[in-house]
Amino acid sequence: MENNPNARLLRIFIGESDKVGQQPLYEAIVFEAKKQSLSGATVTRGIMGFGANSRVHTAKLFEISSDLPLIVEIVDTEEKIKEFTRTVENLFEQTKSGGLITIEKIEVIRYKAGK
Image 1 (cartoon, one colour):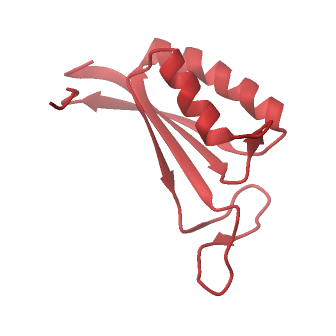
Image 2 (spheres, rainbow, N blue to C red):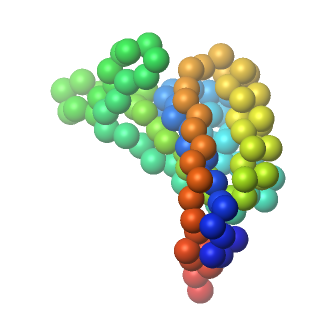
């Protein structure tokens, strides 16, 4: 994976309250990425955002939202990312939730485990 000029970044935008059964959708995505031996996954919580339904979600103290925006990011080869995108689409169908999936071409400069 290191020094890979043809890697891809998969970004999955979802809501914090989206679930697959009782499991949060972001957890299902990360565990499925690990199961499929992808290079790694990171989930980031947004403090404010809106999506296709135009409803604003925010983390302001006076109006606590239980559905903050989340972004799951995964980097791997083009082939593995495209294959995993099918898994994500299937999870979206199971949850009946909205979301956004993007893929970007990136260049990996360094990918090494720590001590």
